[in-house]
Image (cartoon, rainbow, N blue to C red; front, side, top):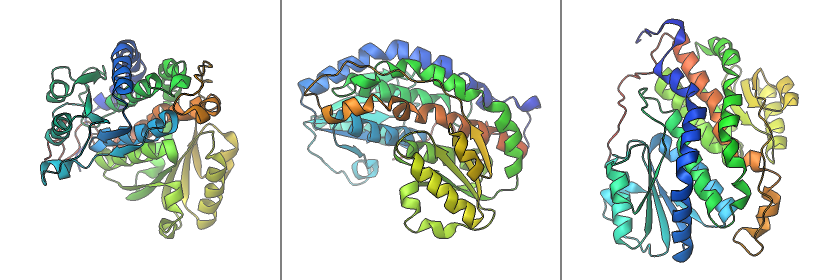
Length: 378
């Protein structure tokens, strides 16, 4: 076991978690014009499919965007299969595709290759990265920068939330996404509010110090959050963490439930809240140790423990373009902008939980064993 050497729990990871509101402000300030240019080019080229290429944490941001683009912008979205490009030389017809490569370092060879090959095949290409001048930024026609600043910890935190912010900004700029244009400006405020849960999480983490495995659950927009938290627990705490959509969890994996099994559930307000309540009742009946992350006080009584967030209300843009792509959903979306943006503040308790649990286990979350900051795969 690698001993931690950070007095009072101060780590690069914790500093970077706390830096997220300011990093997101920088991102919002610099991304608007480039995102609008991408959206304009997509309209001119009559883009009818979006392909997202990413690995690891970036892939979880892509999963969030997959739900967002499809729901708001009405465009089918696929997650790319980089190995088919790099190992098998696959060729696709992409003349009306928008291909978005996501890499925090901008130096993942397989992601860069997908973007390069897609551009050759006629796609409109975008690179989302934290490093200007990186290979990805040079390869894509458009570059959208995260503006997270230097990230020293191997475990990505502020690069994840800034990447999600860039993707939300792009969705807001595209046809059908107008409803998000006011709300995205409040993301720093939402994340700052989520950070107020830190003291509660620092105390709560010690409860799970002997955990060897767990299940992490979320649905629709929060499925990406569940996957990202599971990764953070695996890379910083060495806990085997299995993420599921709550819908998929009922199709067999509920057999995993046994007394004392740690289960973490992301349960924000919105259309999935009734399902969350039903699932908590099931978990309670099976004796699972359930930690719920929510804004709904009534869910606390069903859980073993809870992290209760107090997030501010989110504004929505009431300007509505009749006949736009996603027109049917846009008016309804005005009532749930907070739900669409919630994955960004909701991952913050997950990051903090992984940070403090690692320290409780005597581990250094900044330097997980066997990992480096930049991972190169082909």
